[in-house]
Image (tube, rainbow, N blue to C red; front, side, top):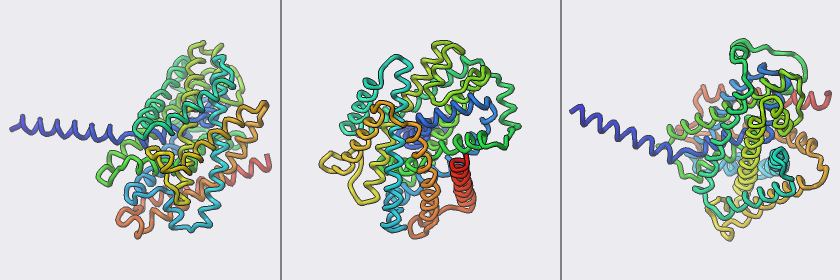
Length: 418
């Protein structure tokens, strides 16, 4: 009798593992893509300037990320519709138009930043941007336009796992684990604009408007149902943990080396170059490769997410598994964003810092608007039925919205008044 029960439980366990690995993807990919070129730059600067002092910010960032992604997944599973569709249906076409025009402009800037990461990482390895950027752009385009969702998702998962190479860079810097533990348990907050700006950056880089649309679209593209919910939540949890773990080791890598030597950096490429004399050539190369993988990963996902939600918002067909003639608007928009981003990067002396600042301002303006739209939809009985937010979901969700609005106002205040 016990033998039969053991075999039955083992079969159940294997079946659950099989279901989970079949579902694995949306949460892990969306979480990992947080660590793009902009995110790596933010974490690198945080570690180089403030050492281990800002590691504590990853904890609230982790909580907010889980709450928001869970809502995205739940809305996608219950309604079978993308977030853009739901916003249009519940907020009207006029509001939708202004939100998505702003998002499109911001995401062209974000995509440009990703190709800047490709160019910078390859320059560390001695390859000109005039070679690396076009090759990367063509490879990304072929993956999406000529591939299908299953192939693309497998490539994205490999990219997600490859980001853990930052652990190697961090360990080679010989971090002070006692000091790291103290900074988490007893965080020291400094009341100055520089410290506050980096705190806003670390928390803000974990959440971007376009990510919410990609998460919900990928749940739908994968065909996930209500019975898959617990496995989807595990996928989201793993993705959020991956995000925070990678961010943690990037901060540690730069804090253990550059901060100790008083070296100031302005971008992620500088961090890779600075690691060479401090932690060895391998640490520098690994950091540069991590930046390259993160940048090309995000250069694929970000324009893809943008094409998804713009087409959804205005009623056009969208999806990687569609043929070009079935969804021409989707593929034309995706291709256009890639081409514009690459052209900007290849312009000699392009004002990349200004592009990044303007993009961050637009993201800061649009993120609270997107989250408020989400919260309104997820609380509507006629849309979500019995799957509307519970009290705890709303408490955490609205708190996240309020905090993000406050951070956005502070960001503008610091931008205007220095």
